[in-house]
Image (cartoon, rainbow over all chains, first blue to last red; front, side, top):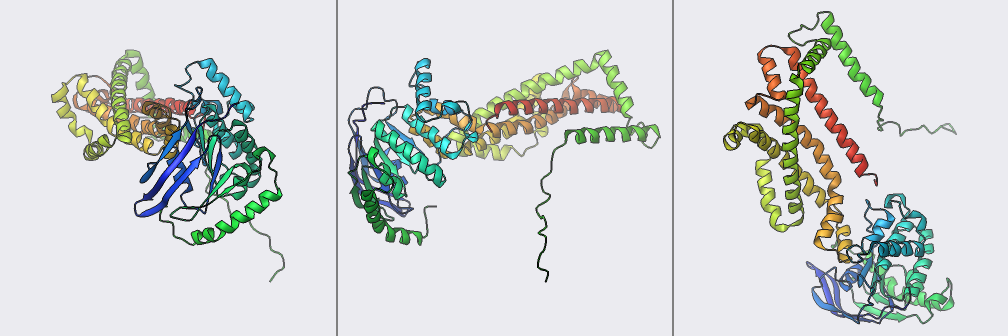
Length: 262
Length: 262
C-alpha cells in the first residue's frame, strides 16, 4: 500500500441524545487527510457514539459530518470500520470474512483472490485462510477485522476500541502491528480508545472528551513520528501524565454515575 | 480441630453423557420384554400383537405391495405439503424479521391462527380444495407454515445487530445483508424448526388421511383398526415411527454439514 488518503473529515456542531440522555454536546472537529486522531475519554462519554456518527452509522440529533476530497480510484468502501467485538461472520472462514467487503465491488474473481492473499500476508494470517473465527484467538480475530477493513482500500478508517476485548499481552503485540499498518497506509483514521497508551502510540492528535454529555475538553498533538515512537519515550511519558491529569477527575466522576444508556 | 483436612471433590454430576449403544439396548430390551409378555400370554394378542406378529404383518404387506402403495401416497403428501408450508413460512418469516410493515400484522394473524388445531379445519379444507390430494397438501402446509414463520423470524431477530451494522458499514445492499448475514444467522433456528414441523406434518398427515382418504398409512391404520387387525395397525404405526426417525436422521446430517463452523 502506497500513497495515502486525501480525504479529510469535518464534524460541524454535532450533538446527540438518546431519549432524555444527552450524550454529545456541540462537537466540531477537523481531521486532515492522512491524519490519525484518537478519541479518548471516560467510559460512557460518547466516544463510540461519535465514531458511529463520523462514518454514517448513526444519525446525530443535531449537526453533520462533511467528507472532503475524492477517494482514490481503487477505494471500494470510503468509510470503513474496525469493531471492538470484531463483528466477524462465524460461518465464514478468515478468507471469506475478508472477502465480504470486496464482493459485488470487485467483480474479477482472480483480483479478489489476490487482494485477499495480500491482506492475509500483510496481517500475518496466511496460514489461517481457511480457519473459522471460532478457532482463532482474540488477537487473530481482530487481525481479520483489520485485514477486512484494509482490503477495501478505505479513504477513512474508524476503529472502535479495537484492542479492548483482548488481554494485555496480545494488546501490546497488536498495538505495534496496528501502529505500523496505520502509519504505512496513511489513511485518515479515527481511533476510539480509553487506553492512553494506545492513543499515544499511534495518533497524531489526541482529542480528550469530557464525561457525559461529551464535549471536547482538550486536543493534544504529538509531534514525534508514529514510526519513531518507543515505549517509555520521555516525550510520550510527559504527554501521558498530562492527559491522565486531565481525564482523572472526569473518569472518577463518571465511574460514580448511573448509566442510563445501558 | 484437626490441622489438615482433605478437600473433597464437590463438583461431580450434572453432566449427562451420550452413549448410543445404551439407547439401542433400551429399545431392544423393551421389544424383548414385549415379545416375552406375548409369548407367555401375559399380553393378549388382540390387545397388543407380539413383535413377531407385527414383523410377519410387515413382511406380508411388503410382499403384497400394500405397504409400498400406502407409503408412497403418504410420502408424496408429506413432501409436497411440508415443502409448500416451509417455503411460504420461511418467506413470510423473513418479511416479519425485516419489515416493520409485515411485522405486527403478520404476528397478529399468526398468534390468532397458530393455536387452532388444524385437524379441526380438515373438513373445511375438503370443501375448499376437494376430497383429493389438494385438501391433504393444504392441511399439512398450513400446519407447517405457522411454526416455520415463528422459527424463521425469531432466528432473524437473534442475528446479532452488530453483524448487520458491520454489513451496512461495508455498504452491502439490503439483499446482500439478507442473503449473507440474516439468513445464515437464522439458519440454526430454521433447522431447529424443521424438527418440529416434520413431526407436526406426520401427525397432520395421519389425521387427514383418517378423515378422508382411501390410500396412505393413516387410512391403512384406520381400516386395520375397524377390522380389529391389530397386527396391521401396529405395523402401520411402526412404519410411521421409522418414517419420523429417518427424516430426523437426514436432518441431523444436514445440520452437521451446515454448521461445521460451530
